Length: 168
Ligand SMILES: [Mg+2]
Image (cartoon, rainbow, N blue to C red; front, side, top):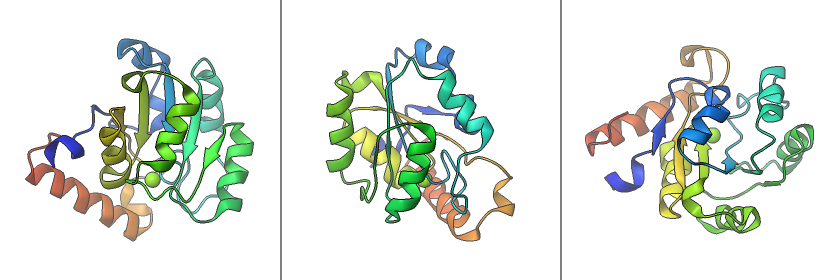
């Protein structure tokens, strides 16, 4: 349990704080990114200019988006905006879609960062597949101003993780 819930790296800020320097330091060569509350706030249908700039700055690293969202049109719109291939309806922590992205990246698993805001989906699936797991904070406003549902989920997950001894 603890092994599955412990991210390889916890970033105290949003995804744009994952820089090329951080990638090089951890010998990372590719990225698999969650979408909702990782790249975009869950009520937004387009990535912000900051996230667009960040994706451009990371063009040296091949990327995939893997989302659990069932709204394919929304995820496709964001993927097209960012020009990154995607899977939606992934059912993380199921490995199937993430494994497909790993195969498409064709890199050693330990050199791929699985980046997301949720422990029970993103971190668990990444750890199951031997990826380098990165937990990020949602973009935009502080948590109290965002949807109570996702904020509550995150709080519960982090409480659970601490209970099993994961340092966050
Ligand atoms: Mg998410």
